[in-house]
Length: 467
Image (cartoon, rainbow, N blue to C red; front, side, top):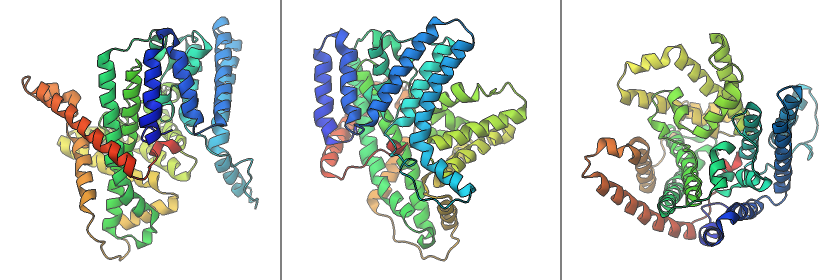
C-alpha cells in the first residue's frame, strides 16, 4: 500500500492514527505491529510469513546469544542468525542472476527454472539489513535483546520505514518502543514533513519520470544527443526526489507516531566530491556499509592497497544490493573507483577550485554514473553514452515541453539552494520566522495540489520499491 495511493492517504493512514491515538500508550506497539502487518501483507501476502518466521528466529537466537559468555558458541549463533537472513536475500534476489551466470560459465543450454526465478519480495533488502544489525549489535555488545517479541517485530515491520528505509538500528529506536510520547509539535512537524515528501514525489519525481522513461526506453541508436541529455538529467533529479520524497514521508509519519528516524539525505547534489556525496546520499545505507562491512574488512587501519580493495568490495556489493544486474555491479565499481581517486588526491586537487566548480564537477560525474544505474543492460549503457556524445548522426529532437523545463527548474532550485535547516545561519533573525512560516504555508498549498493530482493521475510506484 504505497504512501502516494488514495487508499493510504484517505483510508489506511487516517484510520491508523485514530486507533493509535485513541488506544492506550501500552497498546501502541501492538497497534503499530497489527497495522504494519496489514500494510505489508497488502502487497506481500505470502512473503510476510517468511519474514515473520525469520524474525522470530532472530529473536530466539539473540536471546541465546545474551545468555552465553564470549566464545565459539556465541560466534556460531551469530553466524547462523546472519546466514539465515542472507540466505533469504540470496535466494529471492540473486538466485536467477547466479543461475544464469553459472549456466553461462559452464556452457549449459538450460531452460530458465522456476525454482531459481522466484518473485522478488517487496522491501527484502531493507528487512534483511535491519535484521543483521540487530544480531551483530547484540554480538558486539552495542545493543541488547528486545524486551519482547512484539517490540522486536514492531522494529522490523514498522510500516513507515519498512519498504525503503531509512535503515534503522534497534538500539536507536528502542527508547521510543519502551516509552511512547507524542507531542503536538511532533505531530505537526511530522505531518508537514509527510506533505513535503508527497509533493516531491508527485509534483517533481513523477513528472520527470515521463521524459526519463522515454529516453531510456528508446533504442540508443535512435536518440539524438539532446534527447539523451534530457533523459539523464531528468532521471538524475527523478531518482533523488523520488527516494528522498519517500524518506521524508517515512520520517514524517514516524515522527507523528513518536519515533524519530535518522535523516537519509542531505542535499547530495551539493557534494564537492564522491566522498562527500556518500556522506549525503542514502546516509543510512552508506553508514550500514561502513559499520558492518568496511570496518570489519579493516577499514582505514590496513595498508593503503587494502583500503582501495575494501572500497571496491564495499561499493561493488552496494551496487549489487540495488539489484541482480551487471549494470548495478558496474555502477558500484564506478563509485568505488572515484572514492579511490578521492583518497589518492582528487579531493585535494578539487579544493583548489571554487566551490561551485567542485559541485558542478561532482554532479556531472554522479550523473554519468546514473546512466549505468538506469540502463537495463551494460550494452545499453555504453550505447547511451554514445548518444550523449552524439556518436550517431541523429537530428535534434523537438524542444522539451515547458512543463518539463519548469519541473527541472524547481528540482534544481530545491537541490542546490540552502535547505531550511541552514536558514538560521543565512537569514537575519527578524526575517527567519517569516521565511519559515511562508515555507510551511507553501508546502501545505502544494500538498493540497498534490492530493488532487494523486486522485486524477495514473499511479506511479516509488523507484526504490524494486530494490
